[in-house]
Image (tube, rainbow, N blue to C red; front, side):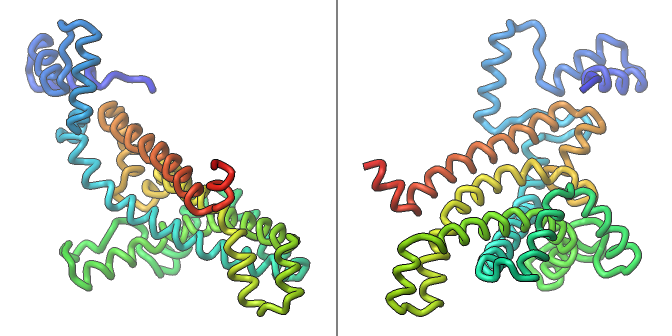
Length: 301
């Protein structure tokens, strides 16, 4: 990305009447940059500050990056968790139903819709929802985490306003992500239905409900748990466009802002947090799958 945040701050100080030397010293003090120290010492100091939770100071918002991210993380976690849980549940339910009705009109229709919806970028769906559902039909608010006249707190008014304002971002995520869960669950279910233990269970006269839940559903959904855990991390990186469109004050919105104003400190803090989320989610996925699937445990032994 072109640009230099130090030059930007220096220009602001020069416009206020400071000399170049005074402006340079002031900027170095603000961002904690010590050019006289050796490079390896600066690198070690950076890691020491990072381990203390000191991510630097935003050059555009004049506050610590850790404080900004501390405000943004709950909003992003709220949107990501609700969207992922609802899209996962909807995709699994429709996938199982389509597998049992494979070849029917419902199967073809929902499969085509799922394939189309998952191929459309979420920011396109978000813009369409803003134009039609928020601006024209006025069914949902177009921006913000809650209403302007609402006081934040654990009140029904505030909670209702938060849920109401989160509706469009959540629906946008669900529309663009449930198709992947649905198609994967349908494929797994069709594969499990052809296994010998399912055929044997039917031959024994077991109820269809028990077969679908115990024999089919449990084994078909196992591979999706790994993907579910991984998706948590990757959705943190995918919130940039959606949060920007709906002016939602999450990590993605601040990352988009940092890119626009060339705030390198805030940008690196956002990237670091997203990277940690992806790494942790992959680690949790490996642990989760080995615990849930007995075949993995037995093969390891």
